[in-house]
Length: 263
Image (tube, rainbow, N blue to C red; front, top):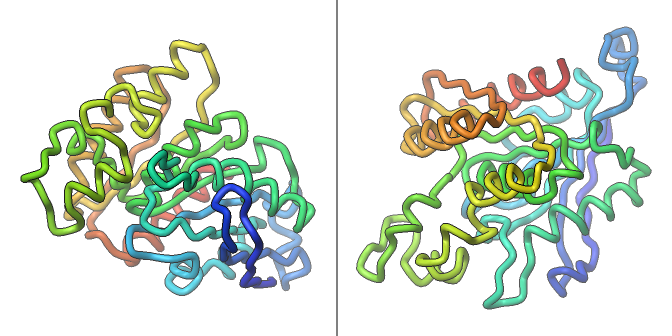
């Protein structure tokens, strides 16, 4: 196993960016005899949540153990509080950064497979939204999506008004991040719109795994989005279990999602 804390200059974001990489070691004791080491190493891009950073996953989940157990590499970018969206107001293009530039940089730097079937994306909360959005927007890059407790707030954005601040952020933040709420139905910032576009254009979908705790405040938006996918005949595996919005749940279901993706 190897861990890297890296920095490089992002042309997409016009500034230095930080990331964490956890790479498996195919000489780890006992692992070469498992089925997972009889195939190409898979590369998993994990996205953090709102108010988080690139080190959240490696600090709170056993990525080194998972990397050596399942023969996967993990790459964690910093998405700030962007919801991993392209932002017209600032010129920051986080969707393009994660879905294109960061993928290209890590593939070149770490000599990774450039095949779709070897490239997965996952995340928690805001990062779960980002994983779904990025996986759909760059459907030819990612073959699997692992979305945990996803902050699927596009329904809330639709009815947002200046008087409707919430404990997380205010109207100005949501408008700055997602664009004008009245345009969200036909915006690329809306994963539902991306689903409809892929269907209309007859494009392939990544396989989707969603999980959310039954006591999580985001359980209903997750149920609604899973139902939306099923209604549109988009294959989705949606699982629930006891849990709230924390790493106790995310640690368990990251591994469940990996096993789903690999098996």
